[in-house]
Length: 507
Image (cartoon, rainbow, N blue to C red; front, side, top):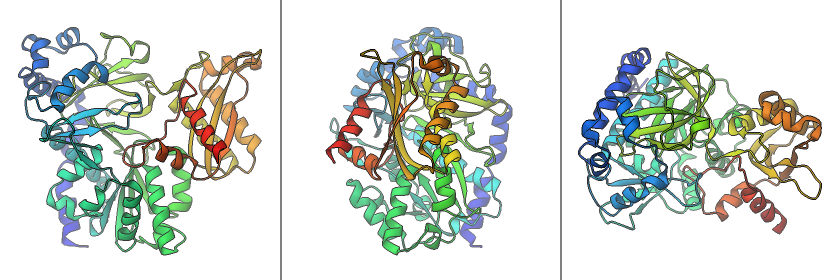
């Protein structure tokens, strides 16, 4: 075992006792973060407007500061984009994460301060590896390279003193030299702008390297791996990377892809999978126990103060917001954050559900604007992921991508849900797939079941199987290849459905 591997493992493991202390006293840790943020916020225009000087308690904060959407904060963010200082955060902002815009048609520019880089994103990356090593003490991950799949950077069109780009690109650009040494590809390649050219170059480079880990969105990881296999002529990627150990994944629910990766991509029980919850707004959670699939430990000492709003009140400016000590198991909450990047009571757009308390582990259950509720059925992304996973298990199917939306009532016909699905391996029985999907949704969602009763409101789902490459071509057409861009799973309109189906008809 190399000296570098041994040394890095030892250094990372020194963090574990502090993580364990955080798990035991979440409220104390969050109170400390809250006080630090308020002290910093007092030196900003936002803090002066909302009288941060008078804020002594969390209750004061919740009374004086409204919950904000991106649109609410944008007038302030725009000023920061144009180079103004001390608007939302006291230190200068040199980076902006350009989000994929999954909750709005336009992109979002999230400020990334040096504090949020150091105390959130970098700390989260180190903790991710520390927890992986705690689960696998014999790891040799640092004897090879970590493959990172990220986005690109561009000059800020509003100011020459800063840059914008995918959060992964911002993080990679600012990594210390030791971290750059153990990752691949080189920074100039990793930050290439044109996505398809970058993938080809990444495949060329990594096909000859000792890749031991991968970090990225599973769907884009699969695209890269296919290119490496095409270049090398190998049947699976372990023939190219025989020492591969772990895939760190996030941004989309991995469960529908798990069988594909375990059976075809990395056909070995020795390969492990670790989920992370990293967003433009901050690094939120990490899977600390690899046996607890889909559950992640909420990281409470990253300069982020968390609030959780019951989903029924998510659109209120002053909702009843719960702290970490007040949340309950198995309830869906809209996630609200105040961060060392200058976001204050900001609606991330995700919903989460706690699966354990002390330690506080959660699952991302969906998006506040990604659901189907055209008929009062309230189907969320978590419902859809569970149903499609069960349908795949029942029929031997493996999916590549999917999206779903409503078919509205009209001309005497009841409504239904329409799904567009791209398979890597099609079901051995299409009818059974559709039946299992529908029955699972009925079992886990009583509102959907009520609307499906005797087909009174909703008929059985309508499913379209589209050719391989459909979703890739659609994302390319929308200018959303690579980085954190991902296929929207559900919509309460036909915007995505009609666009994709129209593209297929053109073919």
